[in-house]
Image (cartoon, rainbow, N blue to C red; front, side):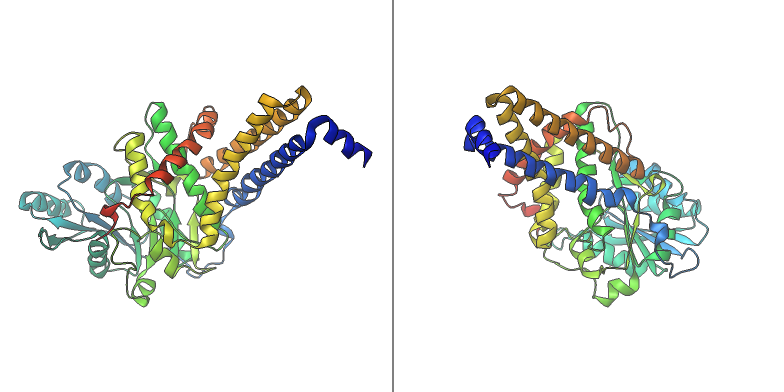
Amino acid sequence: MQYLDYIVQHYSWQGVALAAAILVLFIVQLYYYAVIYGRVAAFRNSRRRKHLQQEPAVSVVVPLFSEDYDYLDTRLRSLLAQRYQAPYEVVVVYVGADNDFYEELTALRLHYPNLVVTKIQYNPRFPISTKMAINVGIKSARHEHILLTTTDAEPASEQWLEMMGKAFMRGDVVLGYTAIERKAGLVNYLIRLSRLHISMAWLARAVSGRTYRGSRCNIGFTKELYFGVKGFTHLNMNIGENDLFIQRISTYDNVSVVLIPKGTMVERQWGGLRWWLSHLHHYAEAYRFYPIAARNAMEWDVASQMLFFLTVLTALVFMPLEFKAVAALLLIIRYVVVVARVSSIAKRVGERGVVLRYFLFDLINPLMVICLRVAMMRKDTTAWK
């Protein structure tokens, strides 16, 4: 008791409260990165029980809404040239009215017999949503097991389909990671790390049997599940196929998570930070429909980080030297734990060059989140029909 009185007399009640806040927030941050995200690093899909004895035949469905010749020459060919032991097809659903482009697309079947092309005639009076195009693609697919991707992404390797196809042997819902393409510059680094950090949250819950989303460029499910719930949910939204629908069909033990570099998709970066925040804002329209536990987990991660930084900064400015030293030590320990965990997860999914500049992302990410939360106060009408 005398020791406590001495501490209060030396640092005041405000100092004791500050120390308690720093310690609690430090423990919260350690819990996230050592325990919650540690589940991602420790997860091994091979430990799950098989319900199929060999890789199933797979249909890859891709909606195509523009006359993108670059896609035909590069990313589509990467899909069509996958190494896979079982039969597979790539179903491209073209929504448009350009006959020349459609002819060039269908001409690819001369070289790739596993290409299936379905056309939906574009009519500005009756817009076609992504969900409608995917629905047509699923109905056109010959195989029971469906993988969805987008024209923005391409496989990181020729074994992508093999990794995702084998995952169907252990679950009827398959989730894979999607990275942002690697470029030079700080902006690209921040965007790539932002994608990794966001993915860590949903991957942690997916490997724990509490799935609430996946990557729109790298998800799969069976036709039985799809038609069993009568297709996609939230048809008044132009988004939701990778989260709101996945929430509906996922159970505790039917989700198979692919955490291997060969099973990663790589998505193109179309702009800078403004584009990235706009991209996040668009898909965040579905955020309000997420389970409350998932939202709380995401919010507390960033909130505890911001509060920890603020309390440590307060200690470094106003408190005595020994108090500053302890606060700085906790800050360093937290950073070492965070970098070690992020690095281990990055290796699992094929993200490279993460560690050296992570302190920049660690400082800037809370500001990016604040900007996103401010943007979310305004409704993104493009996400709604």
